Length: 416
Image (cartoon, rainbow, N blue to C red):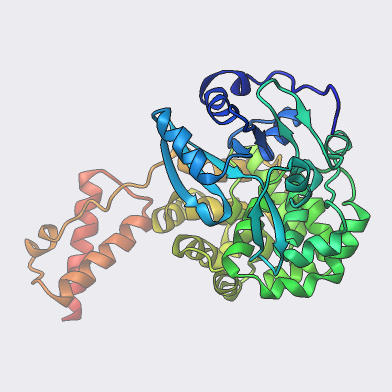
């Protein structure tokens, strides 16, 4: 345990819902602390978004105390000792201290306990095993504070043993290093991940997807992905060859244009060259329909260039919409000879913020009054008119629209 260590500025711990929750659970012979990521992030000076609580009280007692305080208790993982407590609309996961009796992959058999050290030692990494009490005292049984200071992600205990308990910890090792580590990954942990990498094939695709997409958003994603590629792990995850330079260039392009980091776009830059790549990733990672559509829509990235002119850019934005337009532009930019400071690419990427594609202004009535009967001929005339309107760069003047409708009607009449 770290003696006399106190958490610095942490108003979320001393005031509001968390303080009330710890007070309710940490009395009459029971103890409660904030655990895991909230403590880690607070020590790193990062935002604390999710706050989890551990307690010596068994789930039934947790629920009793929560309901007595007028809050809501939801048994979201009662078999593992987890109760979700909702206070003023905010959810907090409260888990009873546990110890593993048997471990077989993700399905560990656990019993409830009262030993904080034992509970900490069953977690994955030292930086995730810290806890803090209501009086801001930090408890560190595995060296997590020192590892946070060193920006080092280290398995608790023997790395190979921890990985064998759940092979997803291989990807978590790299994900946490990308977010919180500095320099090269911990040597012992990396060696164990390489030896156990075949275990990745036993994981569900949904779990792999979740870890990979989180990793792609990390501040040190590129060097971490490079290590994963060198060790053969990234190729196993993607089922293809990673494009690390394209990935890093998309990260730079997002920053240069003020766009938010986007995991799906970054995945496309990393792993999609042709449509088949997108389709493979959609199956391999069990992506959502929207995610899969975005990757497949990157197919013609190689056609995008600022040199094509405004009309071509407007037409692409009209056809694919703002999100796919931005994805395709940034991926094309990332594979061009131009750097992130290139003005023409930045202007192209910002087009959705400067120009909104209009709706096609001509209606069926514009053609029926020109003698085109409803049916295939009408559909053909409208498609021809829309193509002409796009080619003319979306004119809005009535005279130009009438001329386009006249030409399409004459073409349709001649085809009959």
